[in-house]
Length: 221
Picture (spheres, rainbow, N blue to C red):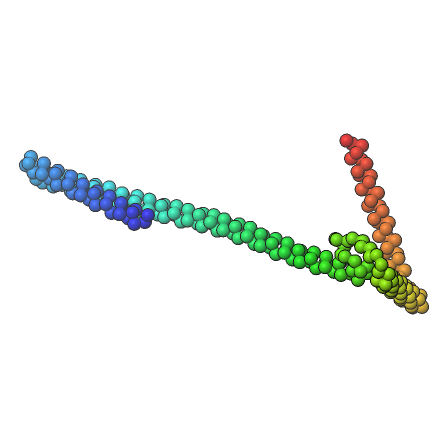
């Protein structure tokens, strides 16, 4: 577009020069035919000066138009580049969101599959049966030995569970006893109890205020 504007400006300038020269020449010829060569020469010079002034002002106006067109092109290119950039960025964000969602769903499926396998393995170890999602009670007729083994396994499992719970209770009791013997531990325990009571009071007050506000809104309606 710059080349086209320059070509138009040059052609307009040349046409103005040719027209001014042609007007000056024709005026000189008319004045020469009348016999007033001196006056015609002065008038021709004045006309030529006026024509050149017009050409000069026209060239300045063309420069102004060229500068304005350049600024408009610059603004338009910046706006268009910004628009294209935002469009491409939004598309990239959408693609990233789809990829991340696909990865999360894939990882979730792996976790669910692993958990289901562990559930089935634990349940088979406990009951010697099928898994949780396909749990079916299968009774075998005439296989008393296998039933005894399953019962023994269940008894072992219950015994181990009870022992673990008993050990946990013993450890908790030992911690409480050590806390009772230690003054600093007793003070710390009392501080925790006090904080817990304060928290319960604050929480109860907030709940009551929330209920009162809700009741007020209901009455207003």
